[in-house]
Amino acid sequence: ATSKGDRSHTTQQLPSLLFTRYIAITMSTTPTVSETCPTWAPFFGFLGVASALIFANTGAAYGTAKSGLGIASMGVMHPGMVMRNIIPVVMAGVLGIYGLIVSVILIGGITETDSSGNTTYSTFSGFAHFAAGICCGLSCLAAGFAIGIVGDAGVRAIGQQERLFVGMILILIFAEALALYGLIVALILSQQSFECSSSA
Image (cartoon, rainbow, N blue to C red):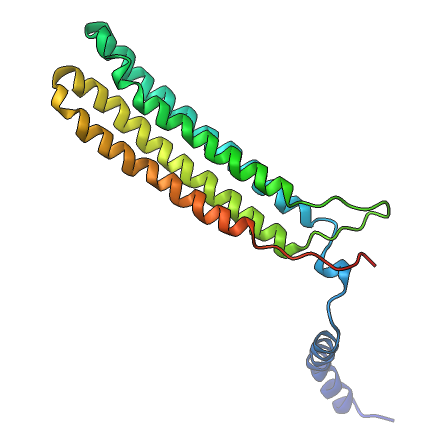
C-alpha cells in the first residue's frame, strides 16, 4: 500500500504531467482541414467587408456634411463662389468609393461552403481580409474628419480672402492622402490568402 506522503507527492505532480502530455500531443499532430478552415472563418472576412464600407461611408458623410455647412454659409454672401469651393465635397465623396472598391475585392475572395457545410476559406484569409477592411475603413474615417473640418473653415475663409484657395486645396490633398495610404495597404492585404486543398 502506498503511504499518504507518496499519494500527496503524486497529486502535486499531476498538473505538470498533464501539461507535458498535452504539449507532446499538440506538437506531434498536424492541423486538420477543419482546424485550418473552420466554419466560422468567413465571419472575419465578411466583417472586413462591412468595416471597409461602413467606416469609409461614415467618413465621407461627415466630410460632406461638415464642408457643406461652410459652403452654404459662404454662399449666402458670395453665391458665385459656390461651385468653385465644392471641391471639399467631391474629395469627401471619393472616400466612399475607396471603401466600395475594397469591399468588392474582399467579398470576391470569400468562398462558399459546400453541401456538407465545409469551407476552403481559412482563418489566415479571414484575418487578412478583416485587417484590410479595418485598414481602409478607419483611414477613410480619419481622412473624412480632416476634410470636413478643413473644408468648413477653408471655404468660409476663402469667402473673405480668395488667395487662400490654393492653400486649402493643398491641405485637402494631404488629408485625402491618408485614405489613399489605407487603400494601398488594404489592397495588398486583400491578396494575402490561403485555401485548404480539400474539405475532408
